[in-house]
Length: 106
Image 1 (cartoon, one colour):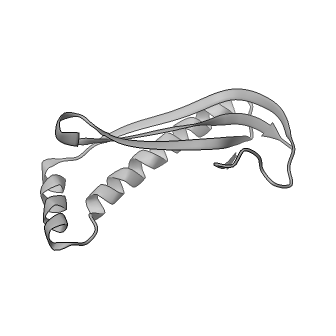
Image 2 (tube, helix red, strand yellow):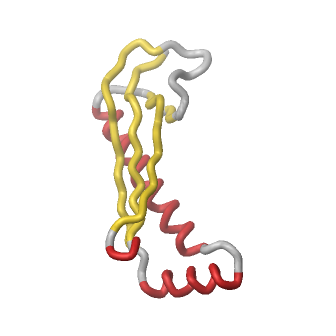
């Protein structure tokens, strides 16, 4: 399955449009992760815990979207849009929402 943010795939031809497919994932941030991220914000640096949570949510959302596309008979998803938001009280959860158009290419 080819997944791309572009509206088409160079060197291929879209032969059928199957419709919009989506994938969503929400992951929580635990209190230890919040504390460590706060410390990193003070002293500088990257928050590996939050990066891992984001990576996990993104992978889940992409897998869900790919499964939906395959169920429709598609072999690619074009025009993918990725949205990231914090939700919950005090932004304690990270939401990744992905959408694109499932297509068949040749």
